[in-house]
Length: 107
Image (cartoon, rainbow, N blue to C red; front, side, top):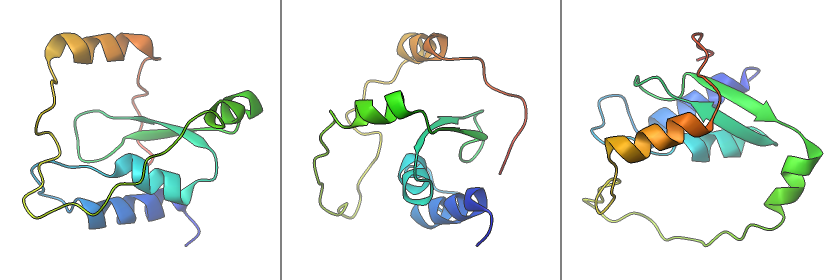
């Protein structure tokens, strides 16, 4: 497939088909398709509305210090947002840490 954005979107749809109540997996599919760091923006619709690629060497060196912990498959009835503490104050704090979202979509 020539369009990696489309491939990432198709993989995301396999993990969280349209209509899924609790979507997840967008970052996973982006990571599988693109070889560099990426920052995703969301506008409340299904999936990311913009993906910014960060091929910066300094940013990639930072990743050398991260350790990933493998997880097993999700069990039946797994709820992505169960036992999370998502609230308006915390979400607003995250919004204010990054740049303003772009109004265009690259889906």
